[in-house]
Image 1 (tube, rainbow, N blue to C red):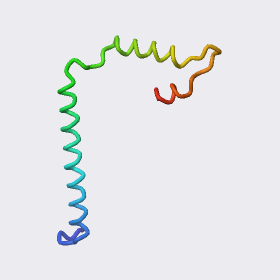
Image 2: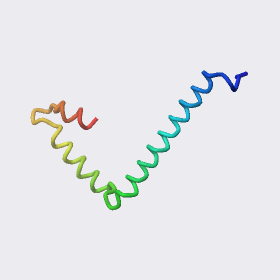
Image 3: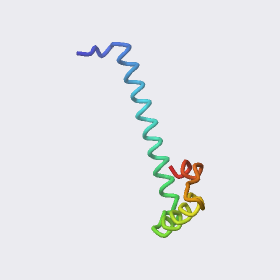
Length: 74
């Protein structure tokens, strides 16, 4: 059972409220970004073009892979 007047409990509640408020602000900011993206949505053709270009740049002629490109892709 928790004592409602416990200062530690009040601090914890304040901390959780701050986290909640930050999460709400982050969600609103993300939603605004999505709403403003308009025609900037990723299309299947964009993904295919990206994949083709990535394959070309990652493979070395000798059959190896470029480490920096793999890291960037990951």
